[in-house]
Length: 302
Image 1 (cartoon, one colour):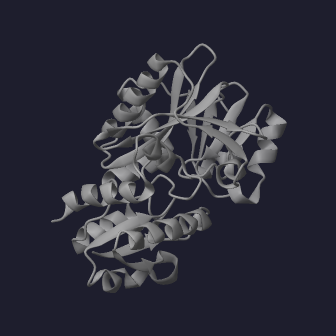
Image 2 (cartoon, helix red, strand yellow):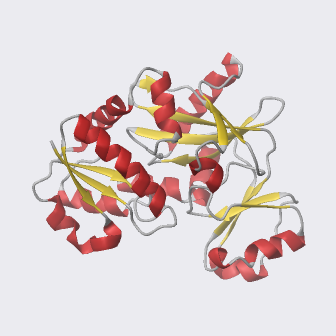
């Protein structure tokens, strides 16, 4: 099959997307596919031309564009099938303030939160008590995430150049264990327990520097908690209208109460990424995971 591998983009997660694309390309070539790499940051207007002669698009973009549904929307116009959720569901999932409303309507516990538009950041004072987790409302890979415990720390966080001009989401800090659980149509994936070796949380370096985090799959947690996380991940996937695959992130308190943080519609596919680890735990090699995602994506063929 002739596959257009769309990866890179211009978000802060560009290098992560390109790293995953190299592994995806290697896997697709091993499976006997022909692969053409297309980077929207290089030639966004060339997507129509690049799509000609290809039968499928494999998207490996993080943040915007990619997880915001823009590329998916254009592919839908072209009539090219791709893996993952459609444009509308992608847009809902990337916006943390919107997705949290959907979680709450579905009865899924999520930390108390406030949305702060960029235009109101200068005069914003939190309604929630400290400590807080503050993050860009549509970001990923933990870029721009900060834990603030006082007014002074909040002012220092907001003064960072990378925060300027961004809509923000503030959440009540939930202390406990960090876990993640993937959804793959036709499979029940096991949760992963995440233990960063340094820092307060699973930040960018912890996610992408080899050896920076202990990731245990399947997570050594009670069977009842495993089942609850799997049910919640699936419920969030369905509530957002997602398809094919996704990955939900959780914090679990010491008394076993899970809180849903967010859902990723294009989970990472690097050598250290979480969803491929979960697939491996149920007997799916990386190449078999790619094959399954292509099979699922082909259902979108017009």
